[in-house]
Image 1 (tube, rainbow, N blue to C red):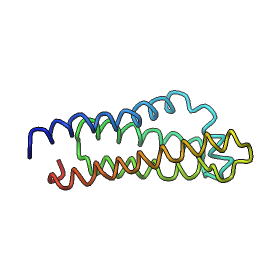
Image 2: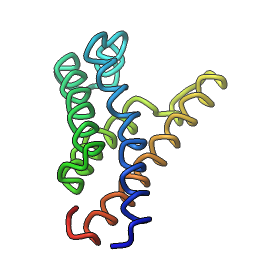
Image 3: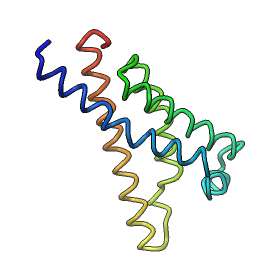
Length: 130
């Protein structure tokens, strides 16, 4: 593997992971209105689900940032990200135009993160799981 590729990978993974680490840590410290929002969307055990998702994002983010089993880290992050994106950022259900725009932006930001995770997984698999 070329040195440049290794350097880019060494920088890109922690940058991608930073959002998950900070978000997961923040929600674990103070979930704020997220459990209520989850309950409103029909999520069973909303407090536990919120904390489990935050813990998964924190653990997956730290693992990805450290380069520990990147394909597995990416899978954990995707498992946390997809239901959160569809449940919490349901812009199509928002009646308030300003809230619709905010939730749409968050929805597509999360889709972008999911795309970056897919690239990270493909890169790790191409490099032999590194």
